[in-house]
Image (cartoon, rainbow, N blue to C red; front, side, top):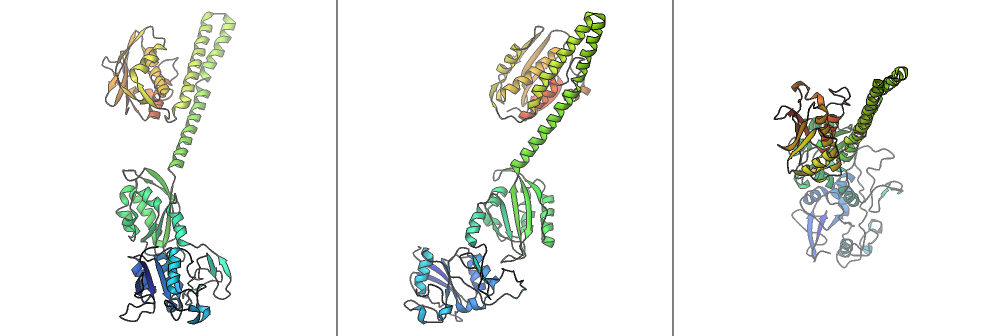
Length: 500
């Protein structure tokens, strides 16, 4: 318990006086006001350990006024001082109508304050007797008093109906929710935000509380969105008619104060209570769900591509095998067997390429530090390269999936060897932001440089058209770029950029 207990006393204060039932009593620091409105105003800039209300104030106050008071100090203990006000040393049972007294009326007011602040007693159920003037329906619980046990009491029958209570507990739960929450009043000013908003938007709640949300969107919050004008137009439109809004997604651009995120926005009006006419806005982090969806879409595209290659590209060599065997059976000539054998070799190569391609669209998740020179020489040792030579001019080390890097280099080496009519020299070296693989072969015409990276493009009759396409897929999985150019000798050169 604090050494000094600050008490906000509301009611029965005469003009020009600051007296209260606890005036000049230690250890109480008493602030007295004459109305609930004045009490709310004081609480907007100060904190109290306990709130004491006179019988007159509760009798005259509307329920919405008391709700505003509770909201101004959520979780703060409150007590009802019955008429006449109990003072230190007097027995409450002898000073007023027993029906007006709280259940713990045998305690003095000072003792009751000590008890609720210490947590050894519950706060009083403060029930307004003056109803609001707006229309109520038979099942409308908006204006029925709520006690601290979470129960509403019908003013006529006294019947109890359970409803949500413990405002401070609810706020504590929502404060740490993974859903970012804005609460706006009927002027669409920010009255409450939770931890999620601070995390998602990279803002300090104290800097945005009590500010107009429209102005926030056009100033402090504008720069955080990838499409600020679209966000502002969509959200501000909900304030015009204050109706339920369709969900939409927004992209928060990351910086030092926040992560890059995709959020799903939804909002709806507040129909009643202290913020009636305002809005609640939810922001749900869907970054991971969006990434998962994109991965699934990419996988589906690869499956469709795989099926297309398997059904189309394998059909041609199969047809060649069938027709060649028929001719061989009829004529017995060796050339038909040789033709069938070449078609079988092409199918084997297609199958090998398809197995590699099946996994290349997936993001790299097994990266390690690799030596480009070491991996290049390992690849060269496993290739049939009797008519070619390798020249490595790099000591570069970077992070990559070692297995996929080998597949990338093997496809580039094989491409150079297959397209060279004479002995070819292949060079691996450094370029700006990455590395290159070049040869001294015939090179690639400038008009064909983009096309050679597309699936199915080949200049050789027996080629699969997948080798360089696989190279581009492996590079993309690492986040690298691919550029085609001429080598210094006029041959083929491909540069892998963005390598770290």
